[in-house]
Amino acid sequence: MNTSGLLAIVFALGVVALSAVTALPEEDMESVSVALGLRAEGLILARCSVCHTADLITQQRLPRERWEATVDKMKHWGAEISQEEQILLVRYLSARYHPGAPDRLPPLEHEAGPAEPLRQEPALTGPLVGVAGRGSGIFEHNCQACHGQGGIGGVGPKLSKNPILKQEEHFWDTVLHGRGPMPAWGSILSEQDIADIHAWLLTR
Amino acid sequence: MNELGKRVLVSRRGCLKLLAAGLGAGMMVHHAASAVVAAQKDGPQSGTGGLTVRVARPFDAETPVGEFASFLTPIDRFFVRSHFGPPAMETIEESRWRLSVGGAVERPQVFSMTSLRQLEPVTITAVLQCSGNGRAYHQPRVPGVQWDRGAVGNAQWTGVRLRDVLQATGVRAEGRHVQFQGADRPAVATVPLFVRSIPLEKALHPDTIVAYEMNGRALPLLHGAPLRVITPGWMAESCIKWLTDIVVREDEAKGYYMQTAYRVPGHLASSSTRLNADAMVPVEVMPVKSLIVSPESGQHATIGPVMIQGVAWAGETRVAKVELSMDEGKSWKTAQLLGEPQPYAWRQWRFIWPAKVPGIFTIVCRATDEQVAAQPPVSPWNPGGFLWNGWDRITVDVNAS
Image (tube, rainbow over all chains, first blue to last red; front, side, top):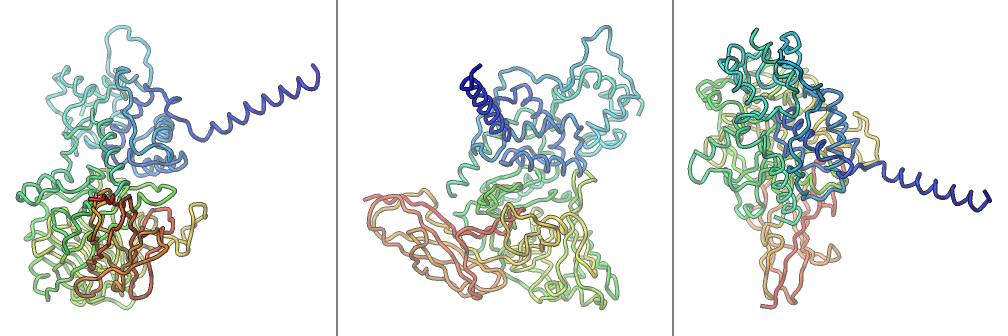
């Protein structure tokens, strides 16, 4: 290879490197898939709206580090956000609600179908059996803020000894699709999670 | 409402639609919303329908600036800022309400509303303004409720002097700060409580009151019924609603809402300044500020005299003058101040502008207080987005006929 060829390659590499650097600070919505956006929205409903409606979030236009600090602050204040959920939330919020985003944002494409669950479960083989021992922790993380410690009730109804536990279809429908003020949990909890919570609540 | 406000409103609707699926009106069962519903049931005129809602729960809503044409802002059009939302309606009954006063006092005491009402009543007209009013104008953008221009109002507050309450208990020599706490509680117990304190001098000022009436009516739930603090001339985060506890202390109150939030750099800072905690001081006095109330931004006018009206206020001091500029501050004309000069309340003003040619004009106004502080073109940036008092600005479309 002659010198000019080498220079051309070096130049091309430089351009690639430069564009990679300039593209780094802001991840935009195109790279945050619709399914991920829907999952993040589900999380906002599940985790944040315990204390405030989502309008407080969607009116912000902040750079990634401010979103990181904000989600950190909310975790510190008791928002039940796991490490995995935090990463997803910060990615989504800083891609959609960044300082350069217009005040009026187009809605996400909801036609894409339901959000994928946060965790992919292996395909079910045989009947779903809830494990009460696991349900306790899942309840604490997801349900306790509204339904109280041990399901004794809070902003949301008391669940321990609630007749809905015996009406399994009704229980599942409520958890998966939400009811009244309760958001839908279908995109946050796996079927196994819901079965575990159900099993644990029956012991309360 | 100006252009920014309109944009914020429109985008808010879009976003609400976006998230409506899971979070419909159903989520509104929480107490803030039930208070809004209750306020709306009060009477046909007392709904909150005239407010621009920034956050549905806990309820944050501001007044459309056109409402400031009246000297007193009507209760049902008065902005609402909630940290957690009001306590349950049934808990605010006057006969059951107790105010406990303790800490560095000679005789700790629990007051009923009846015993408080035996003290001499006083009425003060004062502007109440959220520290974050105008946050949406700070650049770079700052997190928090994106208030436009209407998180402010002027009302008549009736109550008793905090000084008289503290005289009844006596203040021990070491007492330097007076801490307030209300009955509102966060949805999740791990969220810090809204606890604030003010220096003893402000607490003992004869115009600082604990109020039980607003504009001549019993204080409504969303505004702190049955009892709230009013610190005239100071920003509203000192004006604790649903007041249940006063503690006299040697030092400032502890906790997030005193030690971290509602603080600004003691010296001029920019968004790139590194700010340590000791560089920050509590937000206290309201800086001088004015608003153009009418015409509203974007309105049409015709060639000839155009009446421009507005309000101006200056914290603990008085407004000295209000000026308008049609050329972005190159030249200024003085507006006519109406009514009497007084501290705390706002002053209405008007200016008759002889519009001579058609076109789109930007009208800017600024106020100056008696201590010669004038509104700056743009307020100094601060990390909380507080104390915005930059020149107010509207555009008017002047037509030939």
